[in-house]
Image 1 (cartoon, rainbow, N blue to C red):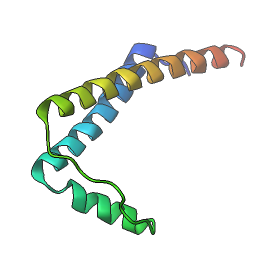
Image 2: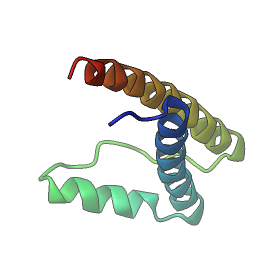
Image 3: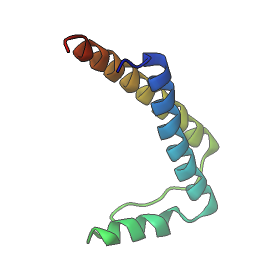
Image 4: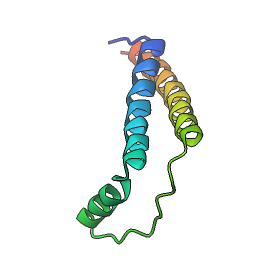
Length: 88
């Protein structure tokens, strides 16, 4: 099956950007530390991290950078996938 690189790139970029937007909202709402403590506790880990105060510019940069990185990764992975499928 052949996939379109731009569509896969957009999907992966949006998916991971949305996850990071949710994380940014959790920091904004003040529940990020509790979530981090819970998730790490499930893995028998003690939380060594400090959740910094919310910054809109940092949140925006996080979401945009994550989108760009995952768009590129999805795009490149799709090109590799399509090239491997030609040999079948």
